[in-house]
Image 1 (cartoon, rainbow, N blue to C red):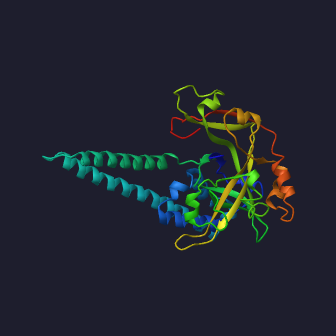
Image 2 (image 1 turned 90 degrees about the horizontal axis):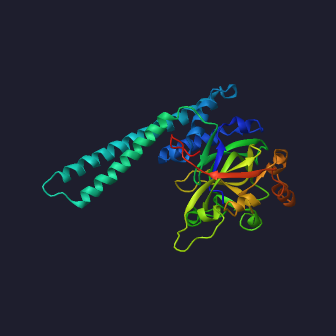
Length: 338
């Protein structure tokens, strides 16, 4: 399965393909994630900065662009305020624990409380520092299951190509939030399950997400093409795959809009379609691979023939010509995955 991808957060990548930014969807996303305190947790930083810069483009010099700018700005300010409040809360816990430890009868519980509070305080401070440090958008950024990312779709009502924020985990038709928690792996849709598990979406709700790398977690011994030695434990490592020759990958996706339910607002969700791996991916220790479709097939993919799924299968079976080089993923000096 593809558990992470390096996606393009610059909306101009999608605009070049005829995508129109769905401002209302992004305003709604900013509003409800702000209210739940998950704005910076689920929306990648580069995407958030790109949204702020959208208002500078000529086509957004209107009330809709202003609405987007204010919604995103408010969510950013609120997120920092929440982190500041978390730091203050943990500082108070630290002070209380230190006071107990300085008393005549210090306890193990106070030691644990002090340690836990320091960890939470330091984590909040690190997030604040990261928010301040990343003031310029990067062209790409990693997403993980649960993150929101821009996905290019064909609007069923208007026929227009739209860039919509979608959560990277699809909630299947008929599922509730509780059912989804029991089966959290629906961020990928297996090609061999498209006619069964995904039949209500395949041939109907197609999208693409632009990426330049994808990541997989593999067993170290499989990466090294050997068997485990007696007594050796299975160690998981993260591998980054890159197409050669280097090129943008338009990953085939399925999506679904989840209607509002109780206190949960309506929102979009998606899954990346995967297939059996080419030899080089299998040799690197993984048994699945994403499907980057050819740019000349985008229109047919986004506007599928609902009466005949064979044409959609043909597109999936004719991906880009690429050899997927792999390397161990490493952390840069800034602490970001590279």
